[in-house]
Length: 271
Image (cartoon, rainbow, N blue to C red; front, side):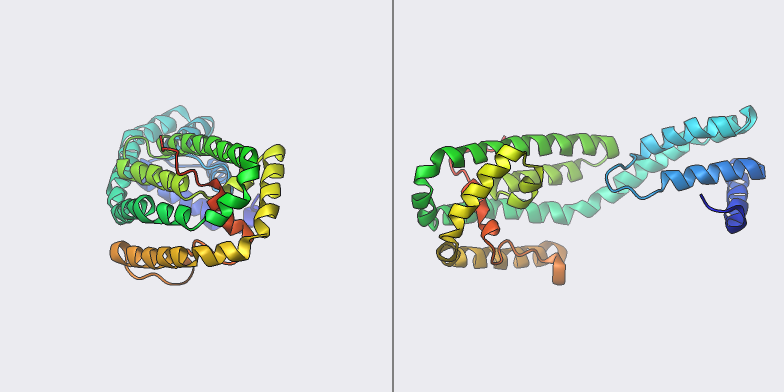
């Protein structure tokens, strides 16, 4: 908690703000309690984040304990306007996702029509080596599909918690990115969610893969170079030139980065 002598200017600012915005004259004690509420609300937590509506509800419950009945009535009189501003902000921000949506649509088409057929065509060595491990490969692919079902549910829950129905473009973008993970498996995010049995199977297949990784890198080099070029051009086309970490290279030089080829199921369909 901030020491009293350190936050006098914050308390004064809060008193001035509520007098100007709501016509509420806060006592020093009330302002201190509201400041503690704001500090708790804004405390850093990447895992737990309020939606705008949840934050407003939490504030209302807290302020009801701090304010007098007449002050609280004045505070509530602004609630409808605050809700309207939240909705308007989300709607106004929606158009910023259009370039990303268009880029993702084009990338998805590239994956379906060019990338996946090319990976399958140039991964004959992989299929040959893993022919005797079909049961383990099928198990890992099935677990990855379960993971995708779970992540899709998370996408939907998070979207409607934080955006409700005000950002349909963002929802479409999020679901297309999820479909992208289906076509070009994201082994690294999957790995973080693995249980112990799944991790054991993945590690076993990874060890088998390491025996042919150099040859497989060579077989897929042209395919991945073309993907890298496509990603660069597609990003520039829809979002402008981007440098550094913004350009994601899909494959570098580790065996784990080849696990996407093990997870690809060319006979499966997205749903």
